[in-house]
Amino acid sequence: MARIVQKYGGTSVGDVERIKKVAERIKAVREEGNELVVVVSARSGVTNELIARAKAVCAEPSEREMDMLLATGEQETIALTAMALHGVGVKAVSYTGAQAGIFTDKHHTKAKIKTINAAPIERDLNDGKVVIVAGFQGINEDGQITTLGRGGSDLTAIALAAAVQADKCEIYTDVDGVYTADPRVVKNAVKLNEISYDEMLELASSGSKVMQSRSVEFASKYDVVFEVRSSFNHNPGTIVKQEVAYMEKVVVRGVAVDKDQAKVTVSNIVDRPGSAARVFRALAEANVIVDMIVQNIGRGGVANLTFTVPQTDSQKAVRAIEPALKEIGGGTVDVKGPIAKLSVVGVGMKTHSGVAAMLFQVLAEAGINIDLISTSEIKITVAIDLARADDAARLAHAAFALDKL
Image (tube, rainbow, N blue to C red; front, side):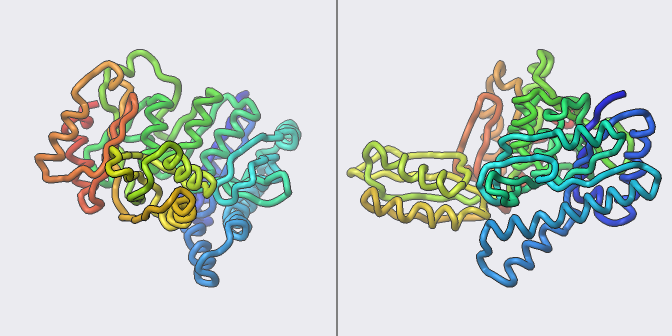
C-alpha cells in the first residue's frame, strides 16, 4: 500500500462530468489499497470570474477581501469532489486549507507556507477516508484566510506530500507532461520523460504554465519527486527529480516565454551607495517580485536602474518606488509593458559554451531586438517585444534542435 498525493487542476475538474471522472480515477487508485490525499483547484474559469466581479464592485479591492473571495472557488470543488466519491461508494472528507492545518505568513494574495499540522489528515487517512484538500489557500496566525498566488494548488500538493511523507506525488493537468516548449506555440515540441528540479524551476519562473515555480522550489528543498501528467488519459507523464549525471549531455532542454512582464526604468537617481538598496527595499516591502536587473554606469552624479516585474504588479511597483525616490533625492519612474521574456534552459549549459551566441544570432537574423539580458548557470533570458515572442520561441526551439530530444 502506498500513500499518494494527487493534485487536479481547474480544467480537470471543470464541470460536473469531469469531477465524476476524477472520482472514478481516485476510486480505482483507492481500490488498489492506496491511501490518498487529493488537492483540487477551483473549476476552470471560476477564479477569473471572481476577480472580474471584485473589480466590478471596486476598482482596487483589498487583498484581504480578495483572499476571502477567491478561496471560495476551491471550497466549491472540494465539496463536489467529496460528494462525487460518496456517489461511487468511496469514503471521503473535504478540507479547506485551514482545516488541513496549512499555516502561512501574513501576506495576502501571495502567502508563503510556514508549517503544516497534518494530524487531522492522518486521522482520516487511518480511518480509510480519501482526504480532499482545497489547494491555493491557508490560514495565518491571526486566523485570516490567505491564498498562495496563481498556481498555488501545486504548492499545496507538494507541501502536503512532504508533510504526510507520501510515497508519490502526482500533478494532474490538461497536458501530458512537461514539453520542450509550449506545444500550442511550437508544434513540434517534445514531451520530456524526466527533468531536473533546477531545470523545471527555471522553466516555471520563466513563464512555463505547467508548474508554479514556488512549488518546484519546495519540492527541491524537501526532495519530493513528483510526476506531471494528464487527467484525461493514463499515459506516463514527466518525472521531476534531482539532477542526474546524464542530464548534462543535453545542452538545452526547454524554451519558455513569459508574456506577462513589464519593464520598469528608474531614471536620474543619485549615484551613491544605498540608492539602489532603498528602491529595491520599497519593492520588497510591497511584495513585488523583481527580475532582470540592470544598472548603468553613473554619469554626472546620477544613474539609471532598469528591471522587470510582472505586468500585474507594475502599478504597485510605481506606487512603492515614488516615495523612495523622494527619500533619496529625486528621480523618475517609467513603465513599459506588457513585454515578453524568452528563456532557454538546460543543466548542460554548465559544461557547454556557445549557447548565448547561438540564441543572440538567431534572434538578430530575424530582426528581434533584445532589451535586457539575464543569465544563470543553466538559463539565459532576454526581454523582447511582446509581438515577436512566439516567433522567438520557435526560432530558439529550432536552433537548439529540441524536436530531436
